[in-house]
Image (cartoon, rainbow, N blue to C red; front, side, top):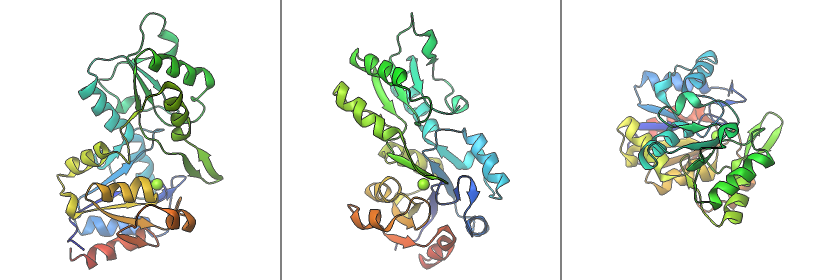
Length: 266
Ligand SMILES: [Mg+2]
């Protein structure tokens, strides 16, 4: 393996489940900090701002701040500012991430009488994904609005099992409107490029650690990053066996990552 100089780390299912730290994760993060490994936490989480995630992780014992965290909403804001400057955006999202969407004009659903949104932005599924909201998105896209999705995850893991996520709704919307969304979070190349740029890291010397074999691991590998799959969070042996590719590394948990880096000769 190429000597690893930087690490990208998924949060949910790798460091925490339902925001509770997984065994050994806090200590492994300390080991990476002690070794001065540049690292970024990369997440498709759409329910909290970077600042709120940093507070939550710090409360759980992890030594991280907002600047260590890259979220799908933050990368979406960069995309919207670059590709749709000044465009009115209808955001359908469960959770408040406005703090990470600075410079993006958001149109409230109830204010849309006069001002027709130019872009429909789908965040994370949940109670905001009502029939009325999704049908409004469908109408706008038919009338030419751009469709941007923060991710297309089909489900996420909670303490109570798997819950249906944005990707499941997005497939229907794309099919009905005969269009394809621009996806800004993982597994998009734009997201990994933003993460590498954030650290000034070289893909060939960067390790991505995730519990989602497709969205985290194989997607990173497609962009030249070394992938490591952990057997925690949403990991399932059957999903692993059925995947389209092979992770560069498979480890039991994030606790094994410092040793993996040492073996890389760091
Ligand atoms: Mg995860």
